[in-house]
View (cartoon, rainbow, N blue to C red):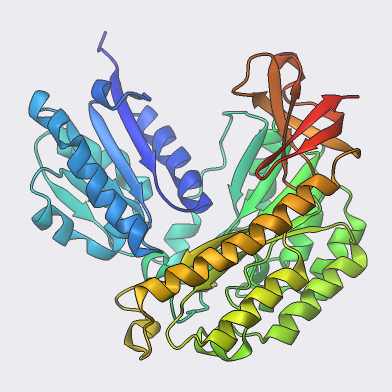
Length: 439
Ligand code: SF4
């Protein structure tokens, strides 16, 4: 019997990459690789990379250097890079990093077993060609029996929006929606294997089906998923504010399985900056969507992404971002310093701000959001929340799960609760989580 080979797989960036990493692991299991959490035990190390922010890209290069001594100890160890950095750099990565063995792009995931087998035979190769949509459509696996309590399900890939700062349309390709029948079949199989919550995933899920008249729109897809027995909760990410439609808003009123949380990235609070970002909405239009969502689901938790220091951002523009954050009352935000991505439209914009100014603005934004999140978290104290239990907490004797608002709750409980929806009284509100008591 052949001894097992071990795969150390590190994921950078977004949930799309987390989902891709699951596919990489499952495809490589087919050619004998078992996942390990110990890089020192690995026969193959893959970094699944992100290039949305310059920092994420730098981390990948640093991490490769950190791992390099392992290769000196074990010369047969293979190094691979996949994801968006791989897509963007292709062959150049092999030239830049002499100890790298394989590179695969965002459209070449399905080829990973063959690429790895070739690397095992001593070939260094980079596969980063985009493939046509017809072929791409057939590559989404449906036969997923790996279970779990919550799972991501890719419903569309790519993006046609070309926000001026964003590299995604160049490294993930144009939008393509998966067939709804395949999505439903995959989720049915997941439900049969114990999955209780699915998060529908895509760069811009709201535009699901728009390019394909044979498919329902995103609201229609949500209704199909809500009809699947065994699935008790549905989430989705990421939403583009300009594509939030009335039928989608109505889903929050009419589908009890749809969680009361939406990630609705505003990116900025000034209409002038939004126009330069090519976001396709103004501040009043964004606020109108927020109001519409709250009119059907007053308790809905809204989270956001905010970019600080976009080229030409004035103090007045930034003040508008701060006021948008306060007005919306986000339960949390992800905030980033603007970083120039070569190849995007904004890379040629004048008015790059001094680094210190960007950092100072980011600090102000974070301080304000910290207070808002704390207030939000404390307001939940004393309420009883339905929590889907996902696993054991770090603290012994406790388990954790999420509320419909996507807040993590830790509470005393037995591991046998995993997979169940239970009522939990919130007794403490922290910055990133809640403490509760099983009712
Ligand atoms: S919507 Fe904009 S920010 Fe989001 S992936 Fe597409 S281009 Fe990038």
